[in-house]
Length: 259
Image (tube, rainbow, N blue to C red):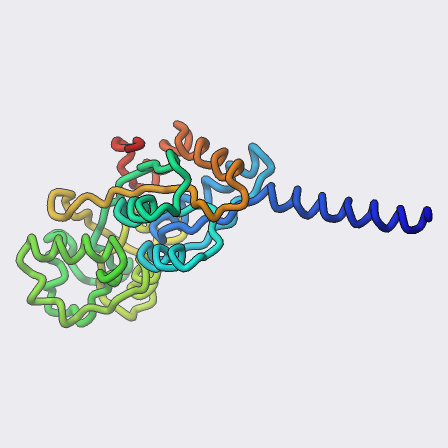
């Protein structure tokens, strides 16, 4: 009897530990422009709370589809507003969790040893030495849509569209340029300023009035099994410390607000 009781108690204890462990972490689907900034945010949060934020980076459009198909994320940080809003309309979001956390900015970027002159800004892609131009896939990546809009605004899109090399997300787009798979490209300012990338290239910012605002929002998903921790992390993201950090990574944080 004592042995049986011990087995039962051990089983209950193991189950409790597993549940406690699960309650101490969440999984966040984050747009690729957040790759470096969010690592800092999550590390600080873990240091202060002892709780873990598991980060998965990718295209906002792809995450949107995955979430609709039941992907087990706790939170979604999108590089635009439409995907979170559509999830909200579809009843897939915890009511009141929508938060507009930043506005992204784009730059034209080349490797450090490139001879391309960036003084013309985005029109640098017209340099005769340019054979391939990397942008994020505009069919699902907000930064790719911004790149196309800016080129159309400057009247150069038709001249260069056949040179595009499309990245699945903005992080892969930066990799294409850094690796030499493209001569030049349009990436997020947050990536151009990231410690592991900033010394590898040069950039010129594209004026924000040349493309629609890349307003970005996050939500807690109804499918989350750790809503309490997700809410705690959301509250942390809303704080001044995270606002300052995002600003250092080149995000515009003047529009941080709910709806």
